[in-house]
Image 1 (spheres, rainbow, N blue to C red):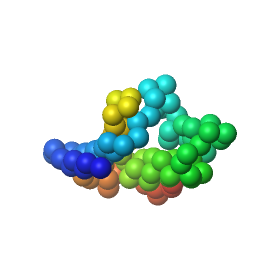
Image 2: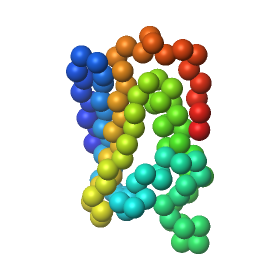
Image 3: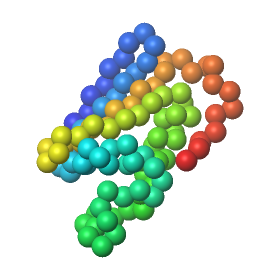
Length: 97
């Protein structure tokens, strides 16, 4: 796993790259949906309920940030999220899944 962090005047950017498992391109947008799992239930090798990335997305968004994934099939998957350095404009943040 590789971690990269940077910032500019308005936001911090974090990228986490997993060099083990990749996600097919056609599934990248769905990995942040609650209960979505890339592997079918009949052939799953990895555990989990499919909630982790939905929770992460909700936490990032409640802080005023954004998250997205990129993947090189057979090589790696990267998750990048940004957080504003000033989120004082946010009113009564509520986590939504």
